[in-house]
Image (cartoon, rainbow, N blue to C red; front, side, top):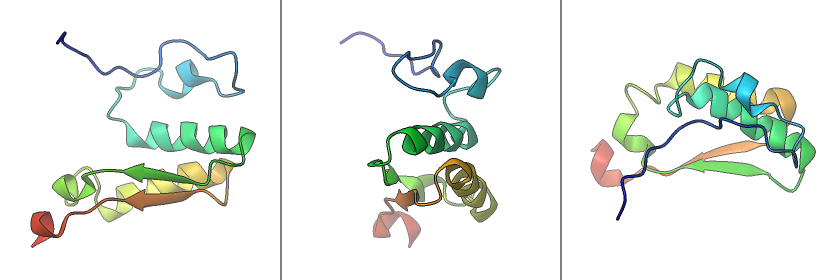
Length: 96
């Protein structure tokens, strides 16, 4: 299996109205604020998109996904699509 490197979008997809390169300018793929913005813009264009899930959120619940950060991600999503929900997958064994 080849090494796979995750990177933010580096081109704008012509099928969407979102400007991915502007949203992620100077950011990494770990910038969940930017992903929230992009998800909101996509949901505004494709209104059948109603929720986003982040798996293993419990691994970083005290750092990457602290409450203020989750609030910012959600706000960025709902600025563009007020109906969009953020669902998290949290494993009991990781938070006890």
